[in-house]
Length: 136
Figure 1 (cartoon, helix red, strand yellow):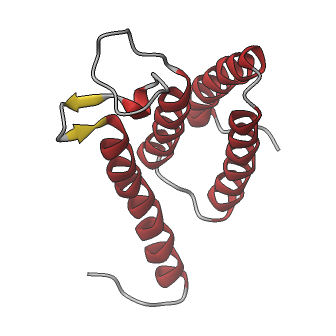
Figure 2 (figure 1 turned 30 degrees about the horizontal axis):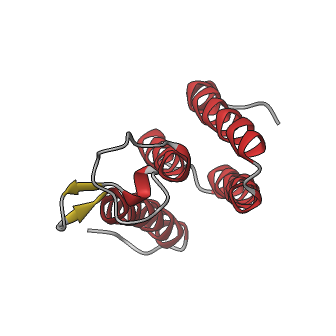
Figure 3 (figure 1 turned 45 degrees about the horizontal axis):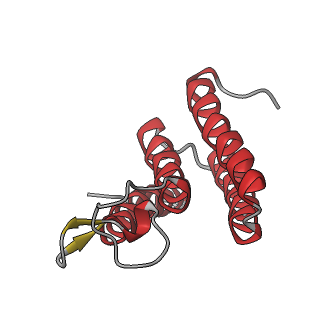
């Protein structure tokens, strides 16, 4: 089944950051990260299946893709020496944005939850409408 025209830029964006993450994971020999990429591929397949059945908004799909990018960057992007981190690993996930108060790792799950909630609500509303329930 061909990809909808509205999804082509999203597919290019997502495949580009996954390809970069795969190359970086292979280069570093980080097998855990390679597992995360495999999980991302499975999740993308599930989202595509849901989208075929219940057309998700383009904005919701972009939000999910950006979530994936933030996760890939969180584990791969190295922060400079001297920047505040709370672990030996100098990656974005360890970076204190506001020292001892707010880390990158605190923001990503909150933003992710919002993206997932938008998708969940879209799916639930469309299922309810298909079953004759009126939504306010």
